[in-house]
Amino acid sequence: MTSHEAPTVAIASRIFAPEVGAAAYRLEALANALACQGAEVRVITSRPPRGLSQLSGNYDVRRWPVLRDAGGNVRGYLQYLSFDLPLFFRLLLLPRPHVVVVEPPPTTGFVVKLVCRLRKIPYVYFSADVSSAAAKGIGLKGPALRLLTWMERSVLSSAAAVLAVSEGVRQEIQTLCGGQRDVCVVGTGVDTTTFSSEGPNKAQEGLYFVYAGTMSEIQGARVFIEAFSLIAERHQDTRLIMFGQGVELPALKELARPLGSQVEFRPPTSGVEVASWFRSSLANLASVRPGKGYDFAFATKALAGLAAGSPAIYAGVGPMGQLIDENQLGRSCDWTPEGVAEALEEMIASPVSSAERARLSAWADENFSLQSVARRAASRVLSLVPGAR
Image (cartoon, rainbow, N blue to C red; front, top):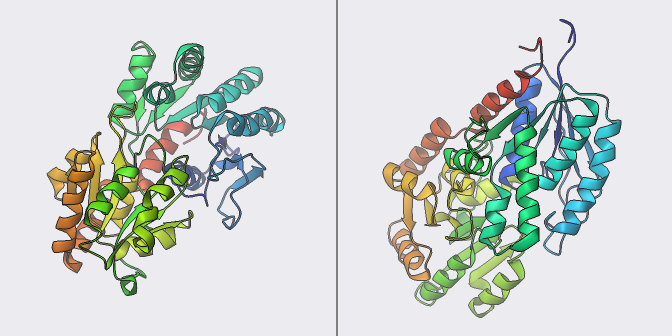
């Protein structure tokens, strides 16, 4: 690279802003951080679901139609294939970048590996999870699991650098790769410019709890509906509002049917809108279901609620529970309806004050700003480009 040439970085991901989700937020922040550090950024992604406006930034976003499941997710073999096959040719024909960044799933990583090997381009694998461990946790077995594990190990081993969102993910990667893989832990966080305690709220909506995010086997969001059913009759003026999509959404709607209008399901929406609901909620809800291969996972959705001033109720396993308890950020409990119901009752009995909401928001901004995570990730990516600062 000459001294006058800007480093060019391609980001390949099946989802990107304005879609709602940790990966979309994380990659949007990375694109902005790379651009701020002088890189030319091209994002190779999918067309967002209908109803979400396509945002613009100081980078180039190239979108392509993709097959989505009934819940609007790019999740499943056919859905991944509908993105990964075109991605091969899209990357092959893309003006040559200095480095490519790719997110899970490993199928997308494998496509990037093939193209980068053909074009002799280094790539970075930005790992928020270990897909083979998660697949095993939800029951995948036999040849399919062995193929996925081989593919993920191959992608991780061939990457010029691997970024992880937490120490738990780093350890899982090390286990998968036999301890032979250097991993840079950049951390995880939320966009604290969008999720903050300052801004519009929904105080006029009365008393409510908010769940915002993916609804799959791994999260186990059903525990919140089961818990709410235990207290709903005693608190008929309180609602449970669930934003998002996922494979469990139809089953969750059926489970909530007896509760009527006390449980509302809303489609994914912008971070700005979700933040306004968080700001006046009794608590934000997050969970990681035990025994599903994600016991190491860091539930970022809890951080988004905290940044907006909403205390967290966290159910299940992973490091988030300890973090909440040590910093007095809400309540952590077992992944059981009874444990969650007790936490819901406590929040109804003792709503947090405005001063406490401000404290929660300040804590999240100081400790888990996505902007600082993105700057660390961008610096590691650009360190692979000779001559880049």
